[in-house]
Length: 112
Image (cartoon, rainbow, N blue to C red; front, side, top):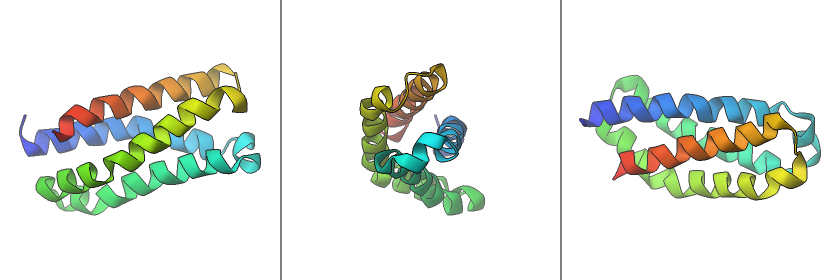
């Protein structure tokens, strides 16, 4: 896979992360839970850091930044997976956790 193809694939996976982030940000539960707010902010920060290189089509810079910030994305994902059952057992939260985990798990190998 070329760097450009990897960048595009990561960006596609981040569309799933974006939807999870938006769901969490606008949930009533986020108003009451600081850790949940930390999760959606961390997801946003990761995607924001990649916006510039994506816009200019600079795959090398994109992949470098994505790799640099990947551990924070993983930590936010791990935190959400840990706190999700306490926050809500609703199917929407369960599916958000699953979607986030799968997207982040697929991003990792694309960075190597």
